[in-house]
Length: 110
Image 1 (cartoon, helix red, strand yellow):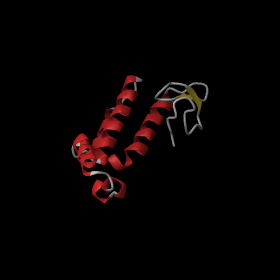
Image 2 (tube, one colour):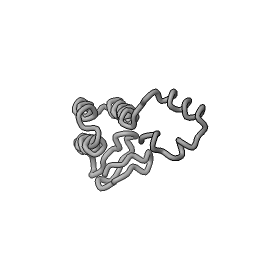
Image 3 (tube, helix red, strand yellow):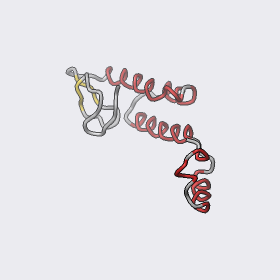
Image 4 (tube, one colour):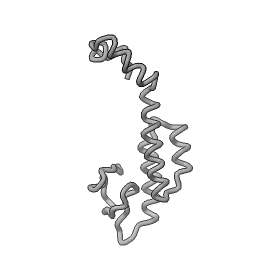
C-alpha cells in the first residue's frame, strides 16, 4: 500500500502522518509479510518441521510463499499421519485428511 495514494492517510493531520511514517521507517508491505512469514517458519521449526526449503521460498518467491509453503508443510504432515488423520502444523490438533482449516487455531491448509 502506498500511503501517498491513501485518502484516509492523507486526510490525517500532518503531525500524525509524520509520526506514522517515522514509526514504520519506510517499511514496505513486503517487509511486513516477510516478518509475518518468518514467525510462521519459526513456529513450524519449533514443531519439528524441516523448514530449510521453506526459508528459501521466503527469499525467492514471496508472492507465492503462502501457497507453496503450505503445500510443503502438508506433505510433511502427511508423513506423520496416523489413522487417516493429520496433525495441524501449528497446534498439533488432529484433523481429518480433508480439513482445509484447523478448528482449534485457525490455520488454513487450502
